[in-house]
Length: 445
Image (tube, rainbow, N blue to C red):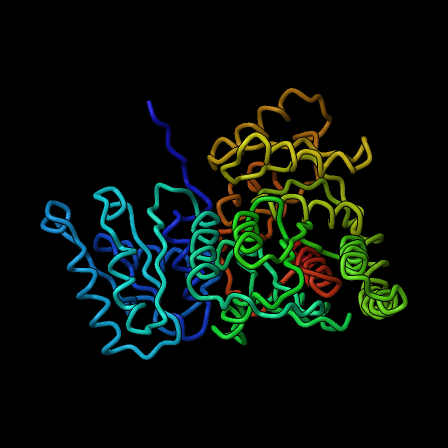
């Protein structure tokens, strides 16, 4: 009997593709699916990522075929052609992307042939088959990027060794993707690099068009964006490296050294950037040391998040804040090989600081497994990790309550605050996260 995921922390593939397109200025998604798919996916992305807000042609304005029983029985290709025609007549966009849903993929509509009619007319339109059953948000992100790289990105451009593309931060799925990418670009610009981030409010379709000129692709994940980067390498010949999300001074110093080595940047330039950023971080952190010690702000921490944030956040609070990692729950749907990669990341922790890693997609099971494990440990306190703090999604507030722990939302969905340019990457992102965490602990004083 098939199972189900209880209170999932991601959308389907169509939702991931839609959020990705909607995060590009003047890019327009055309949803070829049943009524409600587009609006539901857009609402989930908007609310779950800290009330992202309206996009160029998203929300209720998203063009959709809204196929019904007639199209399911007789096929929806003519309806798709009609919708593309009407969209071009009323919407001014630079890139149009047909994305398909479960129903149209199941009945076998040939969306590629219909889209090709308009491509032959010189229209900037692509198509990706993103039926929701094909995977989660990350899969949709990979599928739409593959389509862009194959059907829209120019081929044969001369490589610029100082130009890099960034992959792995899935719009909306990474609630803080905009702030993260903005800060990452600032750091890499300081090394003398040109950076395509693609999905900030300051990017447009031109960077996607000319992305093949990059000398290197950087994937900030062991899971998300790997498929897209591999496709990019096959199509455009650009190699890629995958690195963990760099949160805080320790991880960011290592990240900048790795980038410097990969691109043969003078070590003096790398060290100069590290020195400047480190001074910024510790100027503010030093002012908090008395507070940290006097009020004993050290905590046992439980981190719940996807494959990007589970490791990155745990490393920051352990190595940079001096907290004690107890549990890390990774919520992605993963292959065994991917689980092995992620488990290996935590083996770098000192043995006495190595958290128990849980791979679990169901929200209630995450809490149950942690509580069950804690109940087997003898302790003079209510539980063996008191005082505790939970860093997860809004769905984990109940776990925090059971542990009598503090809570802060760092992973999708985050619905209890507004997210604009916040991000946790780099020295400044780490400082932001530390400030937020300490503020939560002190909020009831």
